[in-house]
Length: 496
Image (cartoon, rainbow, N blue to C red; front, side):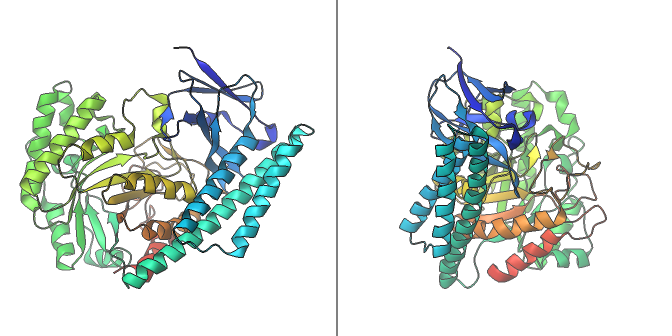
């Protein structure tokens, strides 16, 4: 198939970096990225791909006051003449906001005059940019960047308005929302005073009953810490999730399992044996089984895509057979599917999940893991309109959604982080205060979605070995970060 070339000319003042371009891609109307190659050459971002269809160009773009934000153009056709990057990104963001506002208004959203005025200003800036480009490209690019800033700020205001009105509607039906706010613990038993402190923010905990933690030595199960954790939280009436039992990551699988790499049938048997032991021991005492995680991106034992699907099905089947009354979920990482730009996977994360839903295995929900602001292997920073649209899209599967969230609190190196992913710029840089501000902005939106059943902060503490740099709610000295207080306030305001 012939290679097609999309060219996006940009102004040097926009601050485009090769690192950002390396994460750019083109997607179809279904928002699924196509494999592509991106580069900066002669003042242009150039995208090569073996797809001739029109598509949306998406890339992390430096936005004044907001840091790098993933932005998208409208649908662009292939043509010889280059597009103007800033203008097309401004057009795409403005169209997204106008369409979203219209959709929410059709659902009953009341838009304030201030929002209307702010939206008109963003439109005016974009119009001036378009009409100026043939006379002064530098001025046109600056106006387009101003329009992007104005549009994102309008989007934030509209998102606040939507979340406030949707939450008010939910609270008219229920004084306290049934959504569960959880924390993924680590594999140690904390003192009772520390556990009680956690309950000021969380009405659910997720116990890390992962394969590596329990069966570090083949055939030897270590349940002691998890028994104590479960007994304490059960005695205090806290909802308990367990897992992920089988994470599709080499860092989370037992080291001895590498001896069986290449023996897929043996791996299926070992996984089923472990899951059988865990579910048999704890069934009837937990409210949610997280069967497998990162099934779409995990590097477990160099498994092929079809093998990871089979392994997830085997784990789910085993869990459902032994405990048919407790919901069992499968978790997917990077739900926007940005990783597809560099791979030849046959299935997007949404299609992967759809295959499991259609399997007839009575999947109890879908987990979405979002490690925001980390690269490689994380989710680029996106605004609330993008989050809302993504969640609505996944809700079409007809199952409850379970969110697993990690957001950094620093851009500094983290010697205890065991993945190579590093925080990317967020606003003026990631800080404990920026992490807390993100919670305050985004969690009301999550709670406004009735199909979001649980929201779990996916990293407990930075003092022990952990996956993502500075992603815990407690720092390296075990002191609580401002984000913990923000979550405690969220629970007090909205939840049981």
